[in-house]
Length: 588
Image (cartoon, rainbow, N blue to C red; front, side, top):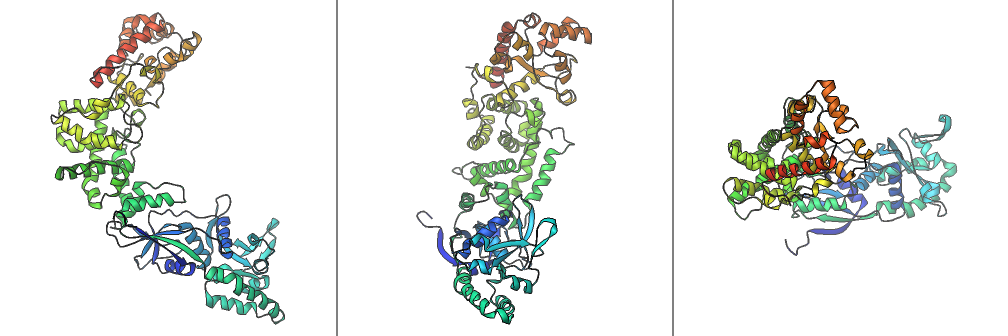
């Protein structure tokens, strides 16, 4: 298709366009959201047409491409009981066409919203006297009225009543939805002329409507761009997002939902079933997967689909970018969907072994995607000790090297084949080669916003850290039961009181996982004082407490003598050794 235009541009009359919508030849793709224009915007749209002002172009997609199939749905207000297949789908112009269709074609009140966003039903009218008067403001010539066609003021006082045709004619208020219906417009005109005393006056007014106003609606032309059916699906979706006036970007899940619906498959319903398996409260790993998304699942399926495609054709690319997900077929999803779910479950169990027990402590939620795909591909091979150690090294290099920030799809695509090849005897994956940790980074790791910060918190638990009071190892049972979190060793209040540099006292070096109760006892006291308080109140001997402190890589003499500098430098070095051991490479 190189060098070939993939669209046609023409103009179409408003009458023909709305007729094609009514006849279901023009419909919406099911990924179009059903949001509604407010009353003021609909009035302004009608005003623009009454003045022959442009209202923008419409973009459609020609149907018929077996590779670009979206489930269609009619414009709001139409039933499709016969399941008629459309000739084209509206990509841009949904709200304009829906508003015009409902206000000009339907006999029912228009569904809209007031200025506060409250849903209301309105009818639209032309004030004949004002619309034919060139000195009148056109904004006052087209009005909307409530569903019962009665306008009320303060105290429910009736200001205007258009609830039947006689009252409409007497008030000179013509329903807008008659203009494109000749027979019904003629019937209204006949009633309008039925008052013999006013027939001459009304004939003049009607003549102006016939000559100046009605033709602007009946002959109004709208520019229409139609994407030809040969346009690839990713291009269609990209074009839609570029022109989407709704302002909310569509997810690949929504796009595939519409695409799979064309094959009578309910992707959303299937995702809910799969999601329940992943976050079911009966599972010990459910909190790790609490934030799993439908896009995570689709990216994993894309990785598995393209990786296995490459096994058959070496030139095929492994990828899980948006365009690749949009190319997934229903067969791809059915082939790999349940396997991907099983991969996430295996990944969560593996993360529990690494002392990660919740989504809150998960350094990178995104790293679950390649990790899950790796477990799917390895199958039973993943239960080998040496294999799990290699997976752990790859995983922690990614965390401590902070390699999975925004836009990691390219790395995911490298991870799956490279980790599998490495486990089978090939060279180390690029994530391990790329990962570096600089010792100075320890000073700037201060909050959970950093993956490396959360990673070190987890590694301290994994290293065997025991609570200062209970002495219980911080594993999955105590993690939830004792409200474990990361807390200061030299309390913040103490450090501020003695002028210790915040860069140092607020860093990960001065923090460790402890229970909520223990942190309450620590308070803001000097370490020597809170240690004494723990020994006295909890009847723990000095040697017993020293043994517990040691599990947190704490220099005993330094903390008991309130020597922050010695404590900090010693613990910094110990953390570096933990990092080097975990990553299998030297800290810079």
